[in-house]
Amino acid sequence: MEIELIEDLGHGPSPYRSAAGVPLVGMHHVAWFSDDVAADVARGRERGMQVCFEAANEVTRVAYLEDPLERGLLLEFIEMNALMREGLSARLA
Image 1 (cartoon, rainbow, N blue to C red):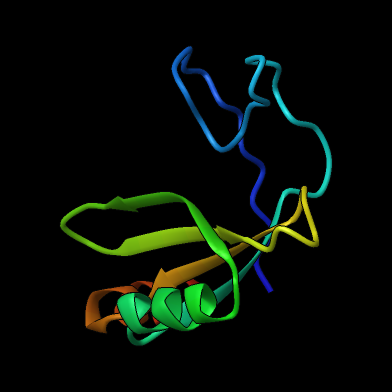
Image 2 (tube, rainbow, N blue to C red; image 1 turned 120 degrees about the vertical axis):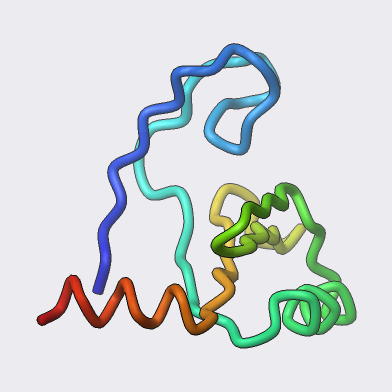
């Protein structure tokens, strides 16, 4: 299990702030490691979920999805590639 403590220091649009720009406090999202983020996002869309945030860098990709019937809790998919596995294994050793 991993618990993230996130402090949003930006001022632009963010999944960590309300539409009015107020920081969100409390349970925000539940995450899963994914071998194929694009496929998981496509399955979520087929089930009526909406993508509300996507990001990528040279290490990984992530996507947050929201179910219109469960507003306020996001589902995150984190790409688990070889580099991510190596880093996670090193942290657990």
